[in-house]
Length: 145
Image (cartoon, rainbow, N blue to C red; front, side, top):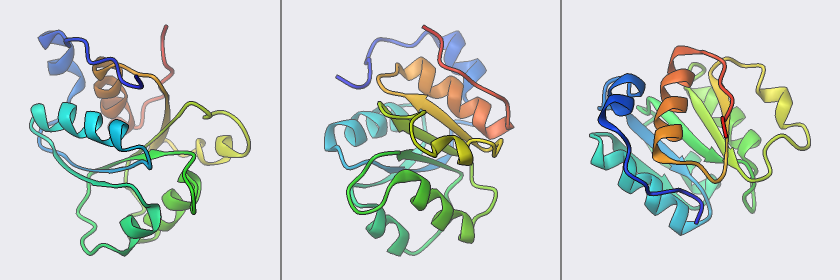
């Protein structure tokens, strides 16, 4: 299972969530992953709009998102291409690239942007929230084992 649904300690949540009222777009072709991320985020006060198809995500009106969580490997359009397209409308949109394949290919080229961070799958809710907070602040982040 890609996300460990273990309980997150309240003190970790308080330190790692920026406001609890972010509008997050989640784009991942795997429905289970989208569902779990949406469940975790909405349980903590975030509004989540999710898409399985990256092309569909780009065609939807309204770019009032405060954070994007995007799978790196998807059919039709990869995560890097989606980020580049989304950045045309919102150049300062913080982005989390999630994938079991992150770190391969030319993904590293886009990671020089301080508002684009990687989060390897699988990850826990605590790791998700900590990385969300770090990408929102432009801090460097690496997954800890």
